[in-house]
Length: 442
Image (cartoon, rainbow, N blue to C red; front, side):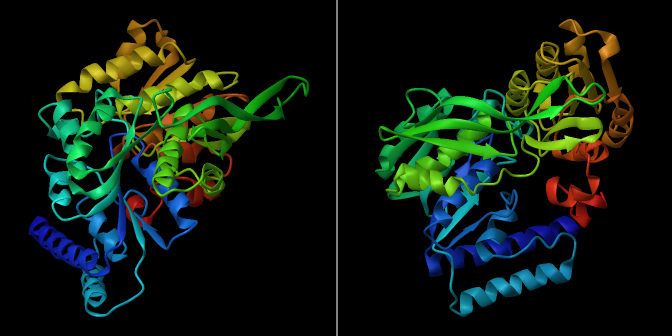
């Protein structure tokens, strides 16, 4: 019965959202891909909000429920039927009575199962479609026949493009870049972004921004803790310096380059775009730098996990100066038949860059096995069944100067590890993902 009611509510909200789009005719940026959708959505919002009245998807509202809620401007009602009825009523009022509606919508669109994006593409008129990284092993592949089918599902957003629109593609990935040919049937302009020379909007000269802190006890030895990243962004033969404070990793700039490509599509000048991106705040749970207990540093990447995202996070560790580099990694879910192999691959990569590995969850046992096979000593690997237990024990292991990377799929609740070891847990509500009451009840 509950599933039946949910389908009914989603159907009504979707019908209302379609009516609102037809009535108010907002211009739409639709963002999909397998990596970096939410960060890209927030960066695009920063660029557009400088000049327009813009609404973006809240947090990661990218599902069959989240998309119509964003269009209607309604909140997630969770398990409250009264609030769902209120959302339906608010949607109806929006249709019946004219109001000031956003000029632009920046919509994040996900695909959990086959047909999700194809269904949206049938009714959503898109002015600019952005497709981010489509890695060899995408998240949510469990419900598809193959990774190729996931790529095709994501690519179906191109079918939503209006005539004379723009398709923005990640240039460093052949799977994404090859979709450029599909823009022709919509007479769409193609703009690419990335790090490689072939990208229209690209970056280089990546470097961490450090602050120096004294190590305790001797007061002499110094350790550099990163507080952000800087890079050069290049477009239309113009270059500008760009900084992101509060996060680390070269891949954190990719979303900003995508947003710059959207700005270029709207004839914005690069200095203006960079000025807008200076107001960009990295989303919670995406490589966020958080002070830890005992003068340690936490890299909080707990929003979600896929093989490509984990690999990118691990690639960041060489940028960090630390007494020990510790990785706490939970299960990567929704990989289906590829789960064992992908977890083992991650373990093999981890063995090369860490001093201590903590795994959380049943599937993460294969991470430990991969690390062992690659030469990480058994004494440096600890395995736990849940994130709370891992966080409690990690408190006693930490030493001044350690750096801890924490990551895992949503359901693993790896933010609980971060909360246990952060220097100011009272700020968890402002800094960590999934701090809403509804999540805390789970």
